[in-house]
Structures are given as structure tokens and as C-alpha cells.
Amino acid sequence: MLEKLFGIHESALQLKAKRVEVLSQNIANADTPGYKARDIDFRDALRAELGYGSVTTTHQRHFPNLSGSHTNEVYRIPYNTSVDGNTVEIGLEQARFGKAASDYQATLDFLQGRVTSFKRALKGE
Amino acid sequence: MSMEQMFSVAGSALSAQLTRLNATASNIANASNVASSSEEAYRGKRVVFRTLVENEMVGTETKFAGSVTVEGLVDDPSLPIRMYAPENPIANEDGYVFKSNVDEMEEMIELTAASRAYQSNIEVLSTAKQMMMRTLEVMKA
Image 1 (cartoon, chains in turn blue, purple):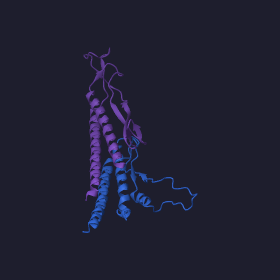
Image 2: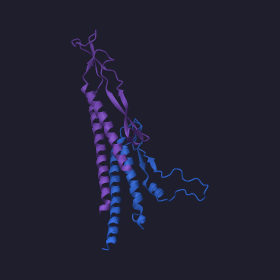
Image 3: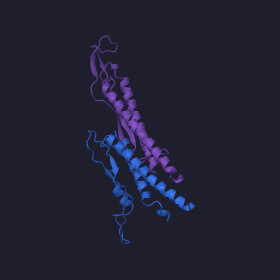
């Protein structure tokens, strides 16, 4: 029962943390020549995390999915290119970073709600 | 753990931007330096950044992939400005001195750009800290 307590939010929280991290790398590399901005395709990543649409093995001699828990990172297509080959558009990245951070906190709120109701159930309130 | 990685990446960017600020400060300080030959004249310095593509161990510390490092310093290739100043004690036999090729305007822009980038990374650090604190408090509810 306990492993189902957090439902989808457990995987979601991990992915959202990963996304914030990827976006922070973009901001850190805003001035690095040739750096290509990256992002996570959240929908695909979450589906993969939950096991939907992933390749499964049905025979013992099948090869397992070698990519393991791959993170669905994709390169961003910039609106404007720059001479040094860097594709980070700092304003946009900052906006996305802010949104990703609040998305993370939203998931935290959902988790906190689960914890609160679970505690209440234990106390018999 | 991913949060730790965020601190390390943003921290590396801070130190890289600081190097850039230092180079700019040095350029501005030497902007009006003169020398007696073209080779000796001060040339503007630019910092070149590089992204780490894999985790690297430096001593006991891990530098995570995605961190920024300073690849090196490059000199501005443009020619120093030749000025006729026979009264200058370091003027060459023809009476010329060579002024550094630093463009102050460009340096001011570089300075602003570097300090803005620095601020962005500070913001990333403080957001990461907030997220971490919030996460620790989830079970307290």
C-alpha cells in the first residue's frame, strides 16, 4: 500500500528535478561557444518512467532495453542563432527555469497533501 | 544526486564568469597603456569557456557534466593603435608609441554581460536552495 501512496508524483518529482537541473545547465552555459541548449520532453520521459510504450522483452534470449533509464533529453531549436554556435537564449531559459521550479514545488505540494492525509488516517481523525 | 549537481554546475558558472570579469577589469585597467613596439603593446584578453561533457574527478571533488570551465585566454588579434608622441620617453626612434587595442565601450558591454550572467547563476543557486529546503519539509506536514 505504501509504495502506492505517492502514485504518479514520485516519478514526476524526480523528472521535474531532472528538468530543473538540465535548465540550470543551460543557464550556466549561456556564454560557452558551441553549447547546445537541452531540455527534457516531460511527457515522453514520464511515460517511459511509468513503463508505457517502452520496449519489453517477452523471451529470455531477447536483449533488454540497453538504454536503461534514459532521460529523454532533446536539443532545443532556437528562435535565433548566434555566431559562436551557442543555442541558449538566456531570457527564455530563465523563464523556463522559473516555471520548472514552480512545477517542482507544485508536485511537492501534491506529495505533502498525500503525507498529510496519510498521517490523518493513521491518527484516526 | 541531482540537487547537488545543480549547485556544482551553477557554482562552476559563477567562477567562470568571475574569471571573465577579471579579464575585463584587466583590459579596462590597461586600456590606455602604451608601449614602444607593436609586439609589446597590451592586447585585450578574452576568456573562452568550455562545457564538461563527462563527470571529472579533481582531487576528491567531482566536477559534473554540464559544468563550465575556462578553456583559456585569447588575445584580441586587432593591431595596437600607433600614435605619434615624440615627447613620450618610451617612444621609438621615429617618435611613435603603440597604445593597447582595448575598446573601452566593448569592455563595458562585456562587463555588463558577465555580471548579468553571474546574477542569473546566483538566482539558479537560490532557487535550488529553496527547492531543497521545501523538499526537506515535505514529511513535516
